[in-house]
Length: 114
Length: 114
Image (cartoon, rainbow over all chains, first blue to last red; front, top):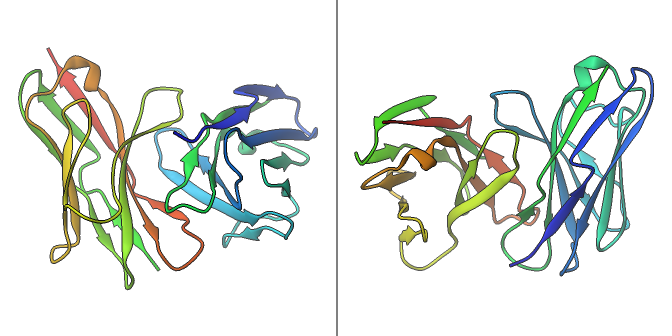
């Protein structure tokens, strides 16, 4: 099956710094990538949808200047959490879709801001 | 817009007993339906999916779900659970409108008791 790799799996950063999370489709070209956020014991909330080469579409309530998404190639999308604060600590999951009918999920990144 | 309802936040069940995790959805367009399982501090694993064809879909580890269009449901069942089935289960829908973004339910924590 299609494989989506997310890196890093865990990251701890200091408050005020920025952190970048990578999402790669390893064996297919991802025309669309999605970023989700999951708080402890809660469901996944869609943050944004990105198509290769164009600007991401953010869901209502998600700060686009806070969560920068870049989808510069068909196999890589990045999420940068800028000026991170403790409330940004969460589990971030990406998914990617090629030309098929379903998306494939990465293993997630646990972000802890101290 | 789509929405997914998982009415049961927690389901305790004894080992080797049957279980049903309920999922209802709302959508004005056709959707694909999915069940994912998440173990603590891990990403999502696809359990099974309904894209088209037979309304009864089965996983390799004994789970099955049936798409019921008239009741807009996609309940997950297993005739005999194991301790290892203890996890969080998420139902999701994906619309066919073009973006294929996934909307998740709030999750059901299945706890299998010895």
